[in-house]
Image (cartoon, rainbow, N blue to C red; front, side):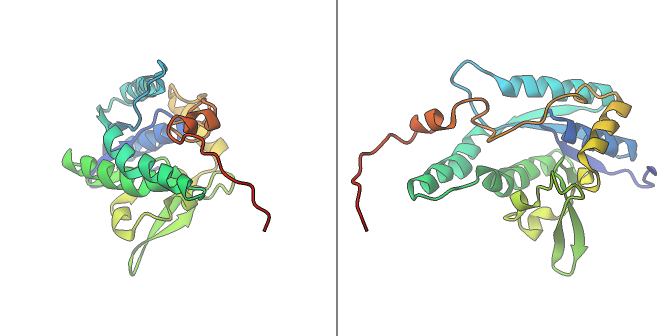
Length: 223
């Protein structure tokens, strides 16, 4: 990879996973001034603290790359702009995807604003998708790995939100990302991919929702 002539200040949204870790490593390798930014979106009430564990991984990777890292708490914004909308959609009998809302309302809105507030000129994430300039701003493209493509989850992100955003991981297949992580010696190289909805984690989905949506009796009708 060639080093850039003009150094930019790049803020990398880091989750503690291998994808965003490699995105940070690639940005640093390119000669950019890189800052890691970790966001917490959920306040755990059951004693578990996966966010703390993920942040420890972010700190470890940033230390390895010799870049600063910061943590921000967007739990309140997430509740108001994502989770409450998720619940209302379920009440209407819909099948919502909170990750879609999280991208448009949190990651590429309040997180991007925070990145700009700390002087970032480019926001980098570990999504498996690509973006290319077009007449209307930016065109969102699928990632090269069809098994990991995440472009669907960004379909609600506007062209304006995509301005000054880059997705370096979208140019790779997952095995290549793992290989890059190992070649960089990153602490997250062998970390398993996260599964499911972020705020549910390993909890039983039905039991979790019952805390917020109590069962309501109804009639069986033959139509």
